[in-house]
Amino acid sequence: MRFGMAVSATAVAVAIGGMTLAARQQPPPQGQAQGAGQGRGGGRGASTPPDATGECPTGMTLVRVGSCQAPEFPPPSIVDYRPKSTLVTAAHLVPKAKFPVVDIHSHTGPSAQTIDKLISEMDALNIRVLNNLSGGFGDQITQKLAYIKSTKYADRFTVFANGLNGFNNVEPGYGAKAAAQLAADVKAGAIGLKIFKQTGKDTLKKDGTRLKINDPELDAFWDMAGTLNIPVIIHTAEPPQFFEPADMHNERWLELSLFPDRRNFGPGQVDFKTLIAERNDLFKKHPKTRFIAAHFAWCAQDLAQCSALLDQNPNVTLEVAAVLYDFGRQPRASRDFFVKYQDRILFGKDTYAPVEYPYYWRVFETKDEYFDYYRDYHAFWKLYGMDLPDVVLKKMYYLNALKVTPGLPQTGWPK
Ligand SMILES: [Zn+2]
Image (cartoon, rainbow, N blue to C red; front, side):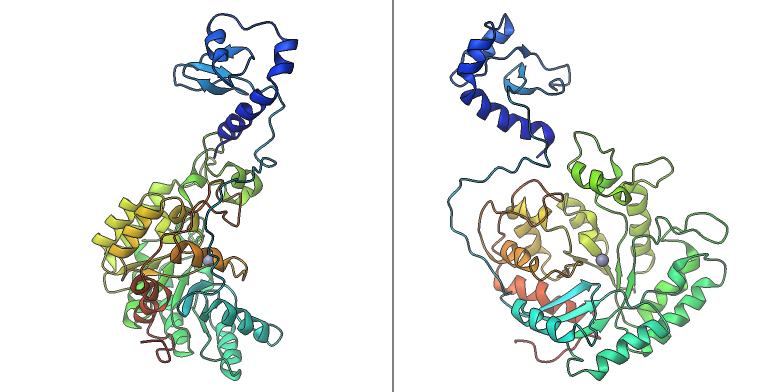
């Protein structure tokens, strides 16, 4: 919902309640305004036509065709406007996933202080494996792996490596060194590679230029991941709305206003299309390396693009973290997509928050309608369930992850 729409709902409500007062205090509207105000429930305030693009002036909303009007009450801001739904419909909360789950996209790993709590939370949600993408490299990842191995839950936690030195100051020879580091980290027990969003977007080479994700210097590194038979989960770009100005038409206005570091539309910043094109070129250049495009490759708002990506790149799978709001607002198209590409989608959550996982289970498993998402600033709209078949759920929850990531514990899963 945009600012204008929030005002619109309020305007209609207050126009009805405020009619007597408005009629007493204001002279009858003139000309065009009169037509707008005469219908049942119509407001009595002054009316203005929309401009040539169909937009109402600031502070006004369309009340009839060709007629904009300001609400009588001071409109609440989108921060404060939280209407309570009066829809009464069946609700099926899903505290525990129907089948065991691999969370391929986490940044949480266990420690002596947290492991017992983590295990009990994971058991309650039916998460069997939590995969920590923030493994680091060298000593860092070796220590994380050694701790996991020392516990009685060694088959519940896995770790991905992160390359070498955050891809800073890449110069000739870096690719070979990073490839050797990756081989060592996998030998130590890493079961995949994670590439963070800074790489390809903000990270600079030694010569001061931006390191493009498809830079030939990294070719040996990507090929090594293929040779080691590990997947590369890659986060490239951000939601497309983060690359657009934070104006009254931006779906993510509130989020962009809350978090300065999510604004990607400033001067000198790389645009969305360029980043996506460079990433897709990387996928094409390394057909023997398996890539997991994090956050559904940032195409969940345009599923035809996701189809093209998967059709053109058999080495690519998608992962669902942090884009639930896009599946939940188009449950029928999403269901069709998940059924068609049921072998190409993995489960991931990103932020580890036990109270948030059940929203995913509910969208994937039920056909509930019009329910809240857990973060207002991500999505002002409501979610709907996709009612996915069991066979598709099982593939997304664990079977696809086991195939794409051979280093995951492969035994003990339901048949
Ligand atoms: Zn992440």
